[in-house]
Length: 383
Image: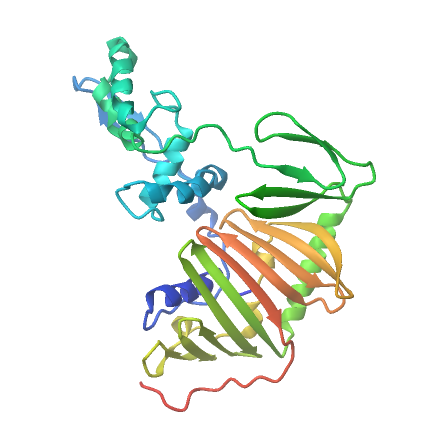
């Protein structure tokens, strides 16, 4: 697992065809406490003056809103944005704000009001209110942001009735988007099946608390990281996306102690040996440069999971092709980043990895452990 900054650089290569972008290798590190105090200091309030200029509203924004609140409306945004005349591409921030605000904020028109009638309905309701309802401001100020923003946003209506099933369980409905189920007493794992828009999704959840499982998960992760760092060579196949319309695939070759090369699906190639790297953008010649602002590349630092393991959970131990595989989940809420890692309990090698962080969804597969691999500087270079 490479440092997050390097993964992001790979994605930028794929999307922007940059000729050279260098990121220093290194793990995410918590800053000193005095820096953390600055980052977590109360936000400076924004101000708004009343029409009579005799009162001022101080509003303090939430600096780090929970990701669950920000992400909740995004799936519906992608389905609905095609039918809207939004002021920007639906995959950028302004449309995300549409989704977040207009889905979650109570608005002054009933659900189901056609977009063409919303302004008049909101105006009638505002006129029916006493002036004190907006004090120390007036109705115009109230219209300036959320109401005007959401006039054209589609009405979500009632939640869809999506079939939900729990294997080997008796299920009954407890209302819209709610299922109550009862499983046998000896059940260890729940298999929840959801069918939506012609596709079936299955989620496996633990049903029983496992004593000492968290400590065991951390031991498995630490041993797997140490094993991967002792490898003489390995390969990695990576697929990464930032959402609809963006996709990148990268193949990596690593050879201890300090060599790596990679090739992307967009034609970018790179060879790294110690402190030097040779970069070849699509259609260009090889260019010699410095790797990571002069830091020496080391293959052992490529495999880093424990720095992001503020919490570790053992999801399951499964038999796969005659091998016992441990499925681990880990999180660093400070970054924030989430990982799901599978470890072969016989060899203690990491086989697959899924990483999710802000705007990045990545799947990796590790293979060809300790097999011969050739990594050498290109013969023809510029610079």
